[in-house]
Amino acid sequence: MKRIRKPFTSINAKIAIIFMLLLLATIEIVGAYFTRQLEQNSVESFETSIQIPNLISNQIATQLNKNNAKKANKQLNRIVSNYSNDAINDITVVDSKSVIRSVSNVNDQGTIGQRATNSDIKKVLTSGRQISKIINDNGKYMIQISPLNIGNGPNTIVGVIVVKAGMQSVFNNIHRVSFLFLTASLVAATLGAGVALVIARAITKPIEEMKDQALRISNGDYSGHVKVYANDEMGELARAFNILSVRIERSQEVSDSERRRLDNVLMHMTDGVIATDRHGNITIINETALNFLDKTENEVKGEPITQLLGLKEVTIQDLMSTQQELIVTANANTHDELILHADFSLIQRVTGFVSGLICVLHDITEQQKNENEQRQFVSNVSHELRTPLTSLRAYVEALNDGAWKNENIAPQFLGVIQNETERMIRMINDLLNLSRMDRGVVKMDLEWVNLNDFLSHILNRFDMMLKNDGVKKYKIRRIFPHQALWVEIDTDKMMQVIDNIMNNAIKYSPDGGLITIRLLQTHKHVILSVSDQGLGIPRKDLSRIFDRFYRVDKARSRKQGGTGLGLAISKEIVEAHHGKIWADSSEGNGSTFYISIPYEKMSEEGDMWDEV
Image (tube, rainbow, N blue to C red):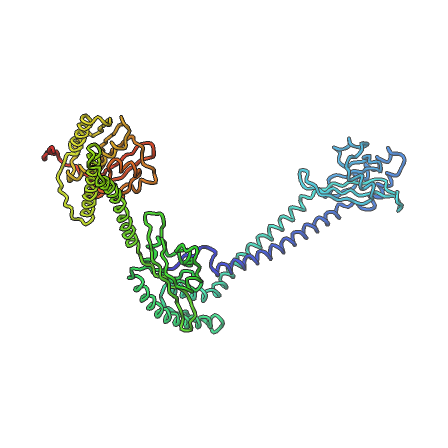
């Protein structure tokens, strides 16, 4: 597919634009200089044309030097009125005392005898030098102030003559010439642009063909060749390009073959593989390693392997010198945390030069997790059994020492022994149940049950226990929908789950507390919640309350006879029903346990749940 170029980005266009810009710059520089000279010459010529002849200026100076001002003014008016110059608009004669003595404009006769306020007149009277200025006053005018002298002495200035002449015709001629020059420049630039395009096209056509061939080669097409137009430098370049194309094709075939072989090996490996250069920067990484580290290839290419694997205290020199095996944690403190075994080896050439490292990552997360769980399980079981066994041994020793003869103490000791024995039996039974669930040998006896009636039956039993047992007072509030919710469950096992959660709510609720049971229907699930007003569960413990033998308050749990396995069994049972169990709580504000069970709407015409 041919790539679309943006305007003015091709060499052809650039050469034409540069040529045209150079032409325009040359024309404009010449034009600016020509226009400036034309304007300067025109102004100088105009300034010369309005110069008062010496004969007239001498006559005016002679009259200004006379003592009879009235008679002299008449002669001045006659001289000024008789002088004719089409370019001059007004002539004003001012004596050495800055008094206006004569004007050529009839409308300005009233100013005769007044003092002239123009500062330029005073400058000319003082310096004796002519001043010419161009001003804009309803059009462009030139004001020329010339001194009038009698003799050649230093104090011979008797006045000045002020000439005002319109220059609009001069500037109109300059603008007309400038416009003609601009038009000629545009025509020349247009013709120059056309010539530049033709020349640029002839120069860049072989280059463009080589560029197209290079693009085809980059896309893997080596079939085309560059046409040789002449035996000049461009022709030699085209021949060299064709030879290079053939050699690249052969090299690419060998490289592709090796690359495919390596990619197939890396792709089908279950372990992650990372290759680096001799500086420890990543050059190759397979898909398995990217999945382990939750990265993309673009993110890790060129990154130091020590940084990628989080090896803060290990340098690349350490890895190359020892090739030690390391345990690496990827995605730490997240749901996707992995424990990886990293094995390093050197990439060496025949000469012994080390050109990089190979790192093989093996996922040992499950293995480590199982080992940790086994160690934790053995530790927990040992701890849980040691406490009652220690208590049993103490009481048995006391009985052996003669306490059995005491009619008051012996029954108490035997009662403790019986309670501890029953607690160990319950714990072992719970462990057996969990073991069977883990091995998947527990059979689920599923049946369709009206969940509203099922929960009411269980809660009625707790209400009856409340009436018969006055040790602890509590209230049970039920919030159920009016619609019957039919679910497929194992009633015995689900009753065990609800009993466990209700017992926990009663145990950890204060006397007189309220326990709220809600039943909520969503689109595909039924959610049961049990809320109490107890001490609550700290946030840090919420994620572990369903672990085996885990207790938030260990001393209180043992005192109340708990084994630490109830919630773990409940979780196994709920998940066996393809459901989910979780808790929400904050310390001091009570706890709420949720059970979500899959639900599908069905007709209520079937058999109703039978009372247990």
